[in-house]
Amino acid sequence: MPSPKPVATHGTCGCTGVHPPAPLFPVLASPTESGGKGRNTLRMDLIPIACWKLNDSGFNFGSSFVVAATKPDFDALANLAKQYPGSPFTIFGHADPVGDDSSNKTLSGHRAQSIYAILIRDTARWESLYQSGGSEGWGQGALEHILTALGFSLSAGYSAAVKQFQQQAGLSPVDGIAGSQTRAKLFAAYMDFLCPTAWKPSDFLARGADSSGKGDFQGCGEFNPYLVFSQSEEQAFAQPENQAARNTENAVNRRVVIYLFRPGTTVSPDKWPCPRSTEGTSGCTRRLWSNGQTRRSPAAARREFGDTQDTFSCRFYHRLALESPCEGVEPKLVELIIPLEEDIDGDPETPDRIRLIQQDGAYTAELTVGDPDVVKDGENPLYYYHFHAVPPGKYAVEVFAHKHWHAILAGLQVSVQGAFYSGKSFEADTDGDQMGTPHEFLADELPPDHSLDLGCC
Image 1 (cartoon, rainbow, N blue to C red):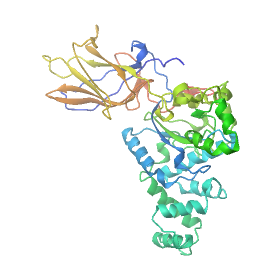
Image 2: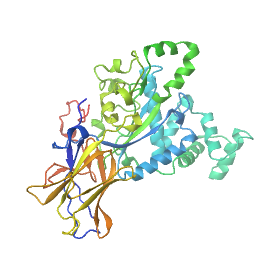
Image 3: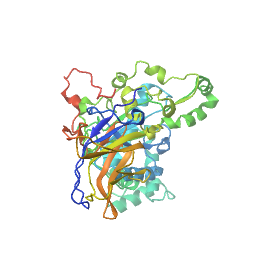
C-alpha cells in the first residue's frame, strides 16, 4: 500500500513565558521515506490518534458479560483519555473464526455494546443483554460474579447475598430476589467498580445520535481476524481433541478495540459504514475487499495482521487499524518540519534553540539555528526545523529562552497522516490559510446515493 502523502496543519497557542509571544506556522509531516519534501491539501479522513484494547480475558468464552478482572484495563482507558482530551471514541468488537458470520457478529456487537454501556453508565443496555435468556454469560452466574466483586459473600447462599445488597442499597422489598430494580442497582454499582470514570454519549464519534449506537459501537464478527492459522494448523484444530487448543490459540482474535480520533471529529450515523450491532452482516459484506474471503482464510503459513497486514476482510477497518499498535502494527516514523519565526526566543544575539518532546518522554530532540537540519526561508522571516524519525504521538514544541525551556505549542498530535493541533487543519503554506475543522466529514457533501468510503476505504 502506498504511504500517505504529507499533510500540514496549523494551530494557535495562548502560551506565555516567551516574550514577545511567538506566532506559529504550519507544521509539515510526512512518512520518513518521503524526506518531508512534499506538500498537499489535507483530506478530512478519519484519523485515529490512540487506541485501547480489551483482550479476550475480559469475557468468559462465548460471553458478553465483562468480568471483574478488567478493572485495570478501564483504569488504563481513563489515563489514555486524559492524555488525549476531547478525542471521541468508537468501539469495535471482534470474534474468532469459529462458528458462522451471523452469530459471531451478534456476539462481537454485544461485547462492544457491553463496554459502551459501562462507559456511559447505561444499565438499560445491560438489562437488554440479561433479558436474552441467560445466553452469552448473563443470568444468575453474572449476578453472583457482580456480588462477589462488590464484596458480598456467597457463603450463605445467593439469596442471602442479594438480601444484603438490597439492604445496603435501600431497596424494598428485601426479598433476596434480583428483580429488574435490584439488577439496575447491581449493574450501576458494578460499572462504578469496574470503571470509576464515566463518559457521556456526546464523547463518542456519533455523539449518541443513534439510539442503537451506530457510529459509537459495532461488532465486526469474524471478518477481521488478527491471527489466521496455516492450512495445516486449521486441519489439525478441526479434530475434536484439539478444539480446546484451537480456542486458546484463537484468543487473540476475540477482542474489543476502542479508537480515539482527533478532537472535534464527528460522524453522522447515516454516513457511518458499519451496521448497527443489532443488524445483520450485509452491511459488513458491502465493505469487504474483493479478496476478503481469501484474506481471512488459512494459507500455507500462519499470518498475523501486525506482520502481514493481509488478514482483515473489511477495507474500512483495515485502514483504521493500519497504524494501530492495538492490532500489532509498529507505527511508522515520520519526518516533521516545523516552521517558526526568526529570533523566536527574543534574543538576537543567541541562535534559537528548539526542542520537540513527546508527552510520555519517549522522544526528545533539539535543534539550534546553524544546524544542518535548520533551514532559513529565503523569502520569509522563518526557519524550518526538520526533525527525523519521529514516532507518532503527542508532542510539545519548546524554545530555550531566559535560561529555561518554554512551551510554545503543547498538544501537537503527530501521525503518518499529518500533524494536528486542537482539531484544526490548514493548508501547507506559510500564511496558514485555514482549511477548516473536522466537525463533519467532507463526505456529508456527497449525494444520498453515493457509496460512502470516508476517504479511507
